[in-house]
Length: 137
Ligand code: T46
Image 1 (cartoon, rainbow, N blue to C red):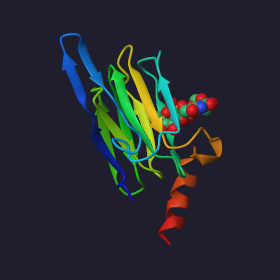
Image 2: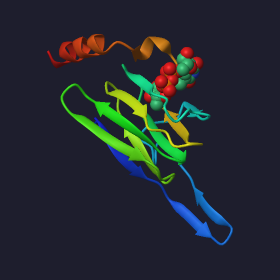
Image 3: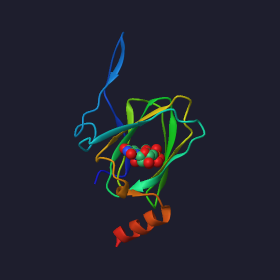
């Protein structure tokens, strides 16, 4: 319903003490936030992701540094470079994602619509594609 992937711009409050950005579930993010997790100490040659979610929606941020995220909804492939802590990438359910090209010291924070549930993952690309074909019927 929310479209497959788009950048969400967050507010930034700046004064001589520095910048402040905030996120409100149901307001800036189109779901109630059930979980927050973050990736850090990521080796620069690391590749993460390589899965899709049955139901989970997420918004992904580069709080520090940068990385690439490649998305595939079974029809279209798109690529985003995240490097601005004010800009989050909304990723809907049923989108295959891969992440790489992490800069030194990059921190990736993710806001998620559900608690962690391994049964929500497609970790096999062929299985993911078969599920998409099933939904299209
Ligand atoms: C995603 C990308 C951006 C947990 O126990 N709880 C959690 O909340 C998460 C996210 C993971 N885990 C466990 C599951 C695995 O045994 O941590 C281990 C590593 O997870 P994974 O290989 O899925 O990590 P990434 O970085 O490839 O993917 C993660 C999220 O799983 C995924 O939803 O979109 O970050």
